Image (cartoon, rainbow, N blue to C red; front, side):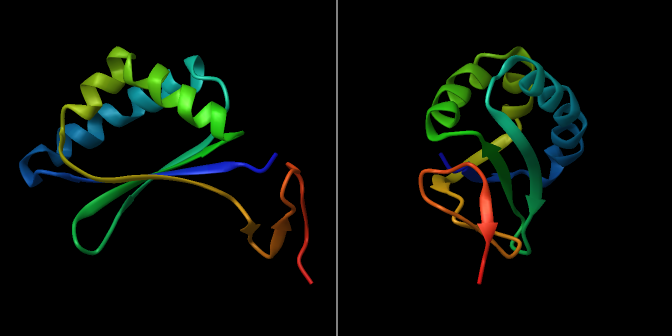
Length: 113
């Protein structure tokens, strides 16, 4: 089964950015410790001042279950209160990663030719 990427795009008010960033480490730690299936989580600030949380899950089921579990964590709630506008939320399977091709139905990538 291929890994799944969650792309959560949102806006944070400029005056809340410092608190938003300060509360993130506790949120990430809590999610890593209490939500199964999480592989990686990265925060990106785009040029238009929107943010994207890029989360890699072991499976689509883990992503869906993980969103529910994470939303209930006090650390996640504290961090999410700084999100002013949810722009979009998307899930997708990883097909190619850094020159490797993940074959559908497998979790291990094969070298792209």
